[in-house]
Length: 148
Image (cartoon, rainbow, N blue to C red):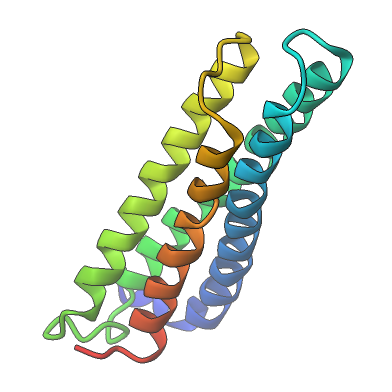
């Protein structure tokens, strides 16, 4: 995979942009759910939130997550980039997998709203909104500090 070496900086730059877009969406989607909980099912406001949630997920969050994964794997495959002897990358990978799982859960929650069958209170989504922040902090510390 030595052909990746000349492109490393570009791949990393686009990877960081994709991560920013993914995280922005992951911070905003649960907040939309909080507001959506405050509307009556089938109301004009509820229908507007359904459109906003779909567009955010399909046009921003999903493509950004895919780009993040593809570019991250390319970075990991670039020779000399990762010290595979440390454990930081294992913790980072676990956090990225958890964030991907949260992404999947948030997508399923959207389907509940889409079908007007959400049963979770706004408080649930307020608490869920903290999960991406916690995972982002773990990921950033692992990549920048590499504590182990």
